[in-house]
Structures are given as structure tokens and as C-alpha cells.
Amino acid sequence: MKHNILLAFAIGGAIMSATACNDDEEIFYAPQVTLETSSREAFFPVEGGQKTVFVSSNASSWSYECEEDWLIIIKDNDRLIMSADKNLDPDSRTAVITISASADPETGDADKNNAVKRFKLIQAGNSVVDLSAAGTANCYMAGTSVSCSFSAKVKGNGKGDGYSKYIDAYGVDIKDAVYADLLWEATYDADRTRSGKIIDGSPVYDSATGTVWFKTGPVEGNAVIAVCKADGEVIWSWHIWVTDKPVATKFFNNVEWMDRNLGALNNTPGDIANRGTFYQWGRKDPFMPSTGEYIDMPRHDYSENSNETAEQEAEIDAELAKLRPLANVFNTQVGDGSAKWVLADYVPNICFTAPGNIPQSVSHPTTFFQCQSSSLGDYIFDWYLVLDKADYSGDNDRVFMQSHSHLWGESEVAESNDKPTVPQTGYKSIFDPCPPGYVVPTQGSYATVGADQWLDLVTDDWVRADYGYVWTKGTGDYFPCAGGMDVSGRLRYTGEDMMYWSAKELDNVNYGKAGGLVSLYHYVAFGAVYENNPFTDFYSFGARCWAAPIRCVKE
Image (cartoon, rainbow, N blue to C red; front, side, top):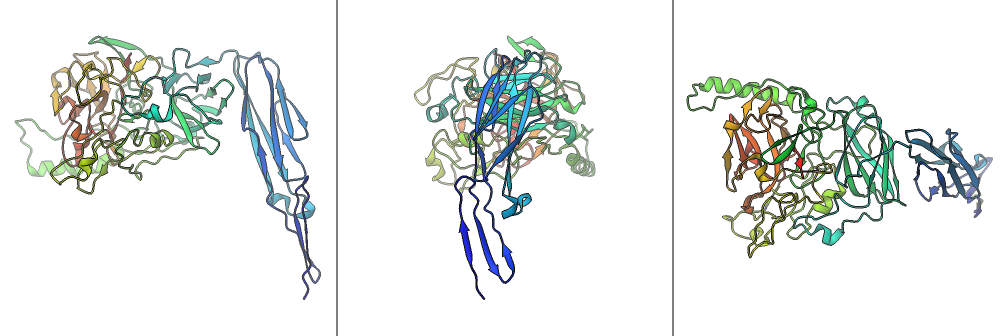
């Protein structure tokens, strides 16, 4: 039996074939078709303009298709030259160009050996809303069915980063961004069909101006848009809060308070859209609350005059065990986004030097950073950093020293020999998750200084009502018991208890806690709960790994 093999390679068409003679049988081999474009998206201002994209392929030819007649396209050798006139419409317009290359059918199966690239071009309308006109931030509010843009030149508000030293290592300017990506979009009721209508299409990044352009869809909800490097790594991301109900504020204790939680669509008692979004302390990117309905949960009587019998306590516990899974349901929607939620599988590194795990959190905005434990059996309540390496190798009687980072700024001015001057009141960092003009409330915003060791009870200022509490001696607003995500990433206490973050980092750094408004049993307090085991019931309240809602205040 003879085998004759013929190889040919043409540089222009770049088609390689092999002919094998086996009696009367001939077999043709075509190489994998490659197709690359010099960019994947482009932007035209309202006035129009011209863009060129270069196309390279090892196929003998390539073609393109586009159904939009407002876009003029000329193919010139290895280039597509695109141009558009002024857009007279109020809304932006989008064109998708499909570029295709296939192997020669005579040398292989074209259907099984082809390549396709899609190039997106968006032109602004004359009613585009610049969301960053009042200043850059990590969150922007927008109405439904609106053409929007925001500056993607700087990270967050472009200012400080507490003591994290992130800016020292990575700067505040956004560099090396190639394209914009919709990471996720989600509604509160877990309707996956509607969740894909929060952002209309894909966002576009204009590298010439450092601007992201997108259009919201007809459905209210939340989304995250990122700018990425060519390899897909997230450089920075922004929370898009889509609601048609403008935020109002109320004045109390020298502070203007938002009328709802950050990310919420309303503040209506019993409506699951009042929960807002959750944040691990010091991080800028949101997680979604439970999609389960509010449920009337039985509650233990912890008063001094409680007459509950052991049998009654057991019945209540059994009912809670049955109802809690129905009330605490993960929302893992991404809509038409590209990201995946990692909520229970990632334990961050134990870091002793700044900026610790912050770069990892920035590039993985949909990953929940769980509580860590040491080889000594101690727990690290902070996802970001362990302050003192000596404690990691110390004896079993010592606990970890946690980071002193001020990632969300601070509300006091203090100076000592062992730490730098604390930022001034109203300081907003690049990690603050609130929209322009707003900030995470400081410790004094709730009219209490906040305990550094335990809790300051403020029960008399609040009244329990409709799956939440009313701040009767404050703004008079309702604060839903939205629950949260505990240090292992599980959803907990939806409809039962509340934990609202402040920017207050507790001075006792041994425990890695931050101050917040909490409800426990029939008490309401400000501070944190200290216990050695963070995985037992409510004991992780205040741990910086915990994810909780935020009620923003004016800067």
C-alpha cells in the first residue's frame, strides 16, 4: 500500500491541504480558520464621524453583513471603513456588523470550519444623559429606556483609598481598557426573562474619550458594567441602579438620608424590591438579596417575663427551620451578562501587606470573599488583610490582628503614634458604593457614637413594623429587615433581622469588625457582635466579611 502526501500553503489565502491516496479514496484537510479584528466595538458622537477596523484571516476571503441603513460601510482590502451622519433622533442607535470567514468548500467542510466576529458600533442620540456630570462614582442611577454615558477615566471618585495603599500600587487612572462588558443584570423577583431587559444590548467603551455608553431597558433593577483588558480581566466596574422613582431625602441629625436602601426600587413595606443590594464592608460591588417573599416568622420571646416552655421553643425552632429556606433564596441572575456568581466557594488569601486582597476583589466583582480561619483556630473576620504577621505565628491564646484600613473613609479626626491621621468627616474613598453626592453613613449619623467593644442600644428610637423597623425618633422612615449574607456567603435573616453598614471601622482591630445598625431579637443597637465563632447564628454581625445593605446619606 502506498501513501502519497501533498502539502501546500498559500500565504494570501493561507489554505493548507493534505491529499492522501489510499486506493480510490482522497481526504482533504483544511486548517482552522482564524479571524481577528483590530477592535470589537466603536462609538460615534451625535455629530457622526468615521471609524476604521482592520480584519485579518487565513481564509482566502471574508465578508460582512449589517442591516442598519444609517451606517455606511466600505470594504477596502483588509479594512472596513464605517461612517455615519449626524443622529437627529433623541435616542442612541446601534449597529452590529457580522464578519465571517470560511474555508474553501473544495478543500474542506465550510460549515464545520468557519469563523465569525461581531463588531458593535453605537452612535449617541441628542438626549444622552451623562450620569457622571455631577462627579464620578461607583454607582449611577438611571431611569428605564434612557441612553446614558459615564466617564470611565478614573476609579470611583478618583480620590483616596483609606490606608489600603491600593492607589500606590495601581493608581486611580483607568488604563489598558479595551472594551466594555455587561457583567450582570437582575430583578428582585427572579424573573429571568425580565432581568435581561434592564440593560438594552451591550455597553460600548470609547477609548478616545474614556467613556462608556449604554441604554437602559424597560425593566427596573440593578446591573454591573465593567471595562476590561483585551484578555477579559476586569479593570473596574460600576453599579447601574435602574429606577424610575427619583430618590428623595430627609434631614435628621445634621444628615440628609436617602428614602430607601442603596439599589432598592422603593421603600414599601412587604415589597421585596425594598431590600436594595448587599455589600461586604469596604467593597464597592453589590450582591443581590433574596428573591423569596417576606414571610411571617415565629419569634422567640426574649423578654424578662418570657414564659416559653421547652416544647414551645422547640416548635418555634422547627417552624423557623422550615420557613427560612423559603425566605432566603439566592438571586443568581445575570441576564444577558457574561459573569458568573461565586457566592460560596472562594476563600481569599491570608495577606499581611497592603493592598492585600483588594486587587482580587476589583477584578472579581461577583465573587463573595468568605471568612478565613488560621491554623491556630482563630477566625479572620476581614476579607482584605491581616494586620500583624506576628499574630499568625503566635500562641493559641492570641487572636488575629485585623486590618485598620478605612476603606470607606472615616468620620472622626484622630492622631496617635501608631496610626496616621484619620480622614476628615465626609471623606469618600474610591471604594465607596454610593452614587455621586452620597456616601456610606458615618458612625454619628444614627445619633449614637457607636461602641468600640460591643453595642449601644437604641431600641427606644425604633418600632418594629411590617418585616422591618420604623425610625420613629429619626427620619421616620422604614428600614426593611432585608437580611444579609453571612461570612460563609449564605443568605440569612430575610424578614427577621437587619444589619445596615456604616463607614465606622471599630478601633479594636482584634476582631475585624465594623459598626452598623443591627436588630437582635427585640433589641436595636449600633455596633457589632463579638464572638469567637462567626459561623454560629448571628455572631458574625459586624464582621467585614458580612454583606449587608446600606442607607446612603448626602456628602
